[in-house]
Length: 70
Image (cartoon, rainbow, N blue to C red):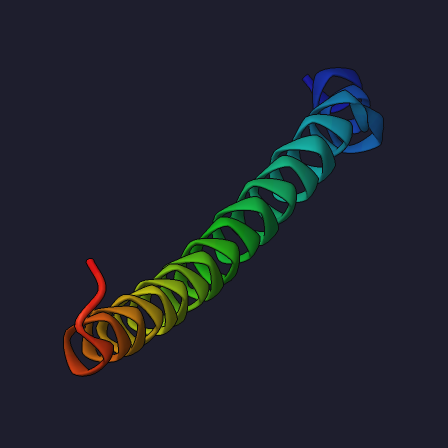
């Protein structure tokens, strides 16, 4: 019985599994955080592009209506 307890105490194969689980969870968490940041930045860029496109279209339309050309 004492031999069984000593073997169990000296066995480190489970510790490697725990290390891999922790490392994998950290990589997944970093990936999710990066995805969220990239998504938010892309939405802001898209919104700004839409606003600039609308401003450009409004400017062209105002110029066309004030000069009488279509």
